[in-house]
Image (cartoon, rainbow, N blue to C red; front, side, top):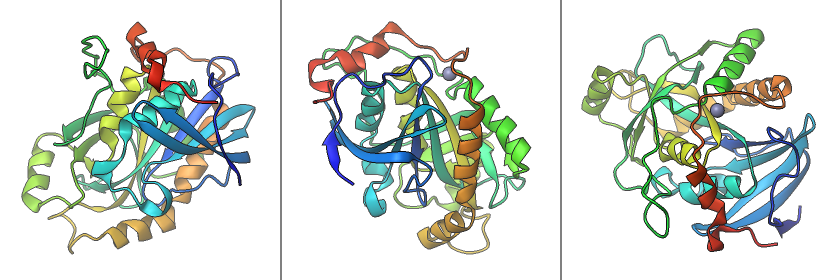
Length: 286
Ligand SMILES: [Zn+2]
């Protein structure tokens, strides 16, 4: 497969025609894409490599959050570059997959959770595009961080497929790369957290700032620290993803197949979102 810089301008299809998948732990490839092509998008935050292909008359981009072979740890993922690249490509919807630990007994290993809220316990990440640097001061509404329309589409698809899933869930994002202490997990549970991971934030926040509809689907790989009967390991997470990871693909394909050309949703799309690609150094180079 040849790598090429993506020509500036992005999506040539009508609104709703360009969709992105972000894969997390155990979800590194996109075998479902027709005519896959590796592309490179330059952003003011750094270059981003992703796959471009087609499916169901749509242009699909696949971005591996942790890079090839899980080489980038959660706290060092270049979240701003990733979302800026998708904005440059004029993506209108992002389906993002994450592997999570569960704090809630009913969210058992193997279950899918369609997220509706998050609690942000990250510590050392830049969580916004609006960081000065020529951008105005912007306070983005985050009442409903995940696109309500895409969530309904995913839940409908998961239901039709007969998957064990939860149509809502509160995602706790920790800094990582270490796992959580049992005391932290008890605290997150008290605060309303139901699943815990290391990559969902600021990704969802940046997508909203960029005016892109974003849906987060988590696969429960284990019970969290203090709930699980044994110490946590990354191998356990990868093993569970191997066993159930195809559920992500099946669900995303089903949702993609029934997704209408356009949709109404409550995602706030402020005019400032367009600044993310109109800043001179953020343009893709052809
Ligand atoms: Zn939306």
